[in-house]
Image (cartoon, rainbow, N blue to C red):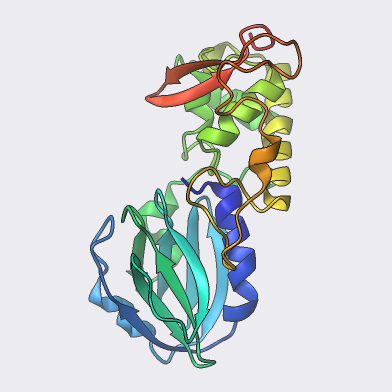
Amino acid sequence: MPELPEVETTLRGIEPHLQNRRIHGVVVRDGRLRWPVPAAVGRAAGQRLLKLRRRGKYLLFELERGGFIIHLGMSGSLRLAVGEAPRKHDHFDIELGSGKCLRFNDPRRFGAFLWVDGELDSHALIRGLGPEPLSEAFTPRYLYERARGRKTAVKNFIMNGRVVVGVGNIYASESLFMAGIHPRRAAGRISLQRYAGLHDAIRDVLSRAIREGGTTLRDFVDADGAPGYFAQNLLVYERAGRDCFQCGAPIRRATVGQRSSFYCAVCQR
């Protein structure tokens, strides 16, 4: 599933081609995504795309009047196409006056393409989100204070988008390993000092993943069709039974919050 680094990689790939460009039209071939694609997306025709940005795992397209919210879902990807016949699972195009189009492909159809008439940040999917993990608002003290009294597993805590956005399953496992914290440890029983280590690990692993173009395990490709290379740097994720890089003990797999979690029982407490 595309997580924050993959969505950020997609944004950086498409932004130079779409920023300040006028939208010629929107073609929806199959609107049966996570939510039905609304007919209102057609209101974008003739409008200029003023700004593209990311909020958590959502891509926000601000137009002169209203805008789009796009989510890549489990297997979605956006690519730039020029004179290319649509492929299987190419569900919609955002056509530009330049002759290029932004094309959305999603085999599992868990993605989303929504229209918002007003401010994008006021939409129900966006307004309750926590701070960005690479922003100044995300601090060790913030994590520590939000965790007070919580009995939930720390892995579930940092994956909660109302606490902090974009720390998905892959990067949560990696960050907890780097910080030496067991994924099942109660969030409220972790000290400020250890949260400082986890804060730094989250920022480090996400920054490195963005530099490597994200992580391709199965489906993800960027706007040019290239895979992400951070998978080569994974320390624990999907390494169950293999030796820990730090101590040599076998990496374990467990289910935490209905998600596969990978950790070292020696290095993580």
